[in-house]
Image (cartoon, rainbow, N blue to C red):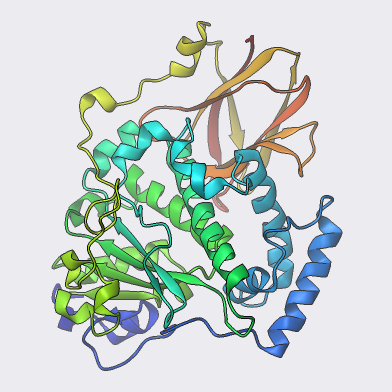
Length: 423
């Protein structure tokens, strides 16, 4: 595949959206359609199935026809698969503390996430920039400008907790608007403007690099737990190596979400598909954000990562003033899992760290109850330092650590350490 736009093969364009300016329109243009009678029947079937497998039922905010229809559409009506994934999402949301009704208002003040916000240039527009025509609001993000430094300043769990909480915030904006809209409308969505102006594609050529793997985990989280929320993804200020960009998109996204992508080589083309008042001035439109802390396009102002921001190994033990015990090694078979049960007395904290040579689905449960997580199930990797964590104020009892090998082919090498220390 060549480097110019004209050298991108038709087969790739069909699978991965298109370059703005082509005559052929791709799928998913305009507002999402309202529910069909068949979809309403499927929503009823899904609701009944979920009630049977979720002891506490479907959370009230998620128990709407439009929200369940998002899952049905995103999973191509595969109710069996949704029934397995949806309860895990709900339990993880509760474990992370993201199930509060005021989550959108408090997200940017969450203590555990606040230290990492200066490194991420994501939208601070909430749902203010709204298009009735598209039944969608605007989301602006800038690609990582220092990916090799980024993975030294954040653990995968730190970044994925941020992404998890951010996606939940966007979902809550959607649910609030759906609650207020007319009944004959379809699901609310958002439109993404993703700025690649500061991205160097050579940083993403190694598929085994930490930044590629971390970006894949973020994409999986979005696609698994937040289906059908995105209406369109416009990639602005693209690099000249468009063919490489398509390959990256196909690596991160499933076929349906790949079709959402539009590469905008010329800023003037963007307002052919979106109202000029909806598009930030920086990208060829008229909109100028005047609400802090976002910049004029609505993205948070990112600062440069320096060596002072790099993480240190085993910091969780130093903060508690305890010595780290010797780690334990385990090999986990493909698609296998390893669990470890720990007794936690009252007025004690739970500390852990681990490294792996691949993706691991990690979670912590109370009393071995899969519906009662105290740490959400996240797919993690070891970046430049070990994964670690600490949970305080736990009720006394047994807590189960679960490490699940995501690979279907290779053993997972796990080195872990778990400690219980006084508060």
